[in-house]
Length: 188
Image (cartoon, rainbow, N blue to C red):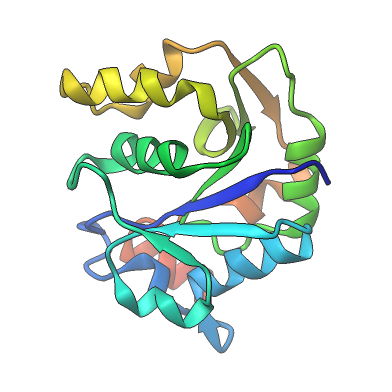
């Protein structure tokens, strides 16, 4: 696999869940451990967690805190890209614990170098938190942060973006677990 970094954005307040989503138990470990495992199985060596939560340190991954706190995914992606040492960067949210190495490899294999972002589309919904970002867009994220434009879709819409549709058989593996109801359905 090409030289690429991965960042797991895990700095959210988890207000709908009521607890840190990355530390939710699933199959004898926690969400974030599943994501790290998938990245390692996809041969991604440089994995960083964007979070102030020291509980993630058990994973022995780099961990960085938001450059500008409390700015949601826009702030998390800006932090990731501003710390990156590679041109291409996998950005994943912490609430997709079922993601697989095969999906990550597929995403990376389908990067369009003419675009600055390659994001997936799952069941007619684009997912900018399952994507590959070119490091060069850090300055665009910074501009939006300075203007308090914190809606991720608005930022992504301002950048040349490729959206690739996930094969239907993978769609359940990329469901976002955002609420207590989502979590209960997942662990049934």
